[in-house]
Length: 380
Image (cartoon, rainbow, N blue to C red; front, side, top):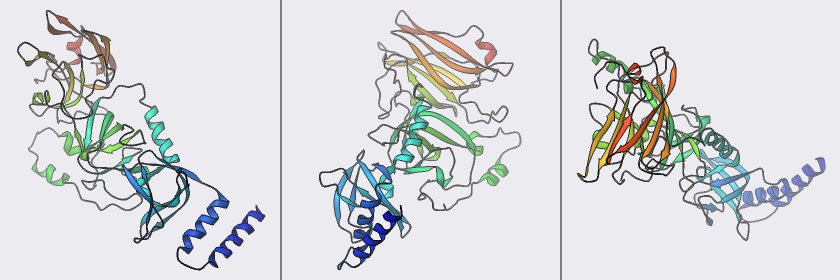
């Protein structure tokens, strides 16, 4: 070890004796070749440049693309921007500097992969798209240490789960650079409380922020999973069924009943062919029990009549339920079952299975025999 330190010092001394510009870069390169690579990184930007230095006037050395692997040699902060010195895996093993926001280190990537392992056997519950650039995070909170990297506006993803978190004083756009303090904008809770009429039910979106746990396609991000702040997420409800979101009731998950694909959620865009759907919906009223909110309070089965070219309601809950995800669909052909968890009169969560079948070209459903016990008398 002592000999290695002496060798490094000798290299530094020799390098500082060299004339010309780029002294710091030559020094770092020389030391890096002796000390070795400390980590690896994967490019997350669609394209990015490895540059001669981190200065504004630096020249571009090599363009790298999303998914490319790089060796991380060194890192530093320059004018509040983090940079990595990297070695590419091209023929000449190009070395230079790249902005940290364009890559994700192997250590951080592994944490995202572990998150994805938790829901690897679950079907996606919905699909979404970012309406503004937002940080992908390891947990459903604004702690700077949880920020993985920033996803671009318009990024699409599958929604695997979500969480209601008491409203925080945060900006509408989660755009702070990792490690920097965010500017805050106070919520209007006091104004909301003052304006609420006596006896008016408390509203869900007044009390909570929603966070989405998402799965990302490799074409969007090498990191497969993370959490996104819900204010920046637009649910991609298919256009042919979005009309059925009525009376302050919003869809929270929708899955097709007329496909054999295990991936039943439309993730690419809002356009889909007409078909049969099971939809779980939620009103905007606070209904917490023991501090926990239901994921959904209504079930709707929509079927498409090919002859009339219109939708009809095959079945729906007549009262409100108290249910949690995930929604699972099983079966083949016209005979399908779906299962959800519902809270019973005794407060226990129970798996309830619904049977869907065809009868003379009409879609029908057989609910659990005791479904009435799981519904409130409140009108829909």
